[in-house]
Image (tube, rainbow, N blue to C red):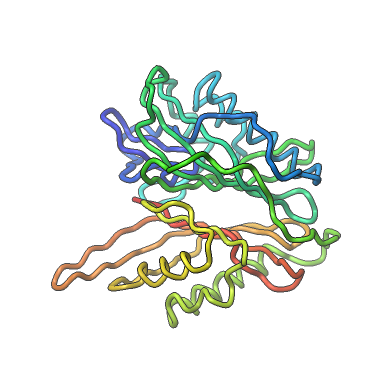
Length: 318
């Protein structure tokens, strides 16, 4: 997420307004900052999957390092070499962007409140709130938002951050929800080395984009998971099906939204994966026309072991 400050642009965790509205990336220093105050609090839902707990522990350690040291140090420690972040409507190599940054006194804090993992235990994602303070001594955050992070287990067993994206919104009301995971019974799936699950997912995303271009928001109806979470800049995270449908109707009113797929990946078990790309939003208000170029990320899951469903859908701010 990218963030506009008095000094330079920041690349906030998850690049989307985990990163706020108005970020700019080039011509200025890319900086990261974001999320809610780190907390080691334990979820009210017991996490029984050991791989999922390890991924969550990694996210918590990541947030703690950002709090104890600085955002740059934390991201460089956990970003994969091929990690992706976003700015200026374009994807960028996250590791290289952070290497260009310099340490400052801002504080980006965050915590996961929802996490899920593939049947193979090597691929997962988590989401949660973030807060950004311009200096560590600030009593109140300057910005708020939510992030969506995709993690992948490496051959040595360590988890690395692959994609980080998010949104910004006003100060949330009430306390942050407790950490939880899917309510669905996990399926036993063995990795299949003979199936190219990435290509399968890319093909599914292309079909969805084609359907969306023809049918608009109705293209979502048959592919939204009952556990879906939708992220749109300026709005709280949407988890209720009625709220999601109302948002989709409003999103497409007097607007033409065009998705351009760039890349993605899937778990070795072929039941969980993500895609990302560019979004062009053409708004028409009377004689006035406005074009916005930004980014999107979708996370798909085969909840029944066969059919891909959207479980997370993110469109960032500028």
